[in-house]
Image (cartoon, rainbow, N blue to C red; front, side, top):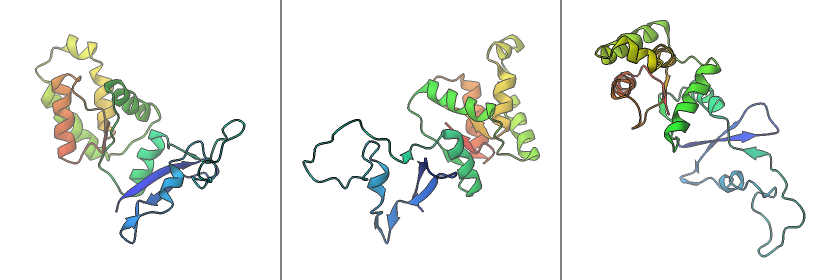
Amino acid sequence: DLLYLVGDRHAEEDRLVPMLVDGAPNPRGASFDEPGDPTGGNRRSGARERGPRRRTRWRPPRRTDTVERLGDEGLLPAIYFVFSRKGCDDAAARCFREGIRLTTTEEAARIRVLMEDCTGSLADADLDTLDYDTFCEMASRGIAPHHAGMVPAFREGVERCFTEGLIKVVF
């Protein structure tokens, strides 16, 4: 299924909406993409907007809410695209800070083994500088960034863990 998650300011839970209905684009889909149009895109053609733009009920969902919802719906593992290296790092760190855990005890232990395997050639001083312990703890919870700016050993560890289905979300 192709699904679209949209934040709802009027509900406790974001809405998970099918992108296709009977094989065609969901007719309600466009209404979620009109951030400044409270009519959901049903304004008369050529009609002028007066006054300040009103905020709609729809908003982008928070990344942490999205990750938790994907887990609740059984939609993991997932690759969550973020279009900057810093954004990838920040998204993974936020999930970590908010205490999200997507792995079992056994999976977390296996992740640590694979990460140690990949980083074994790095000196302890380098690992300290790179804050390896925090990175490894984050990965052991099933969350990790992945981008070209990462230390190759860290990136390889993430790739191996994701390939084995251990890391559940990469940014």
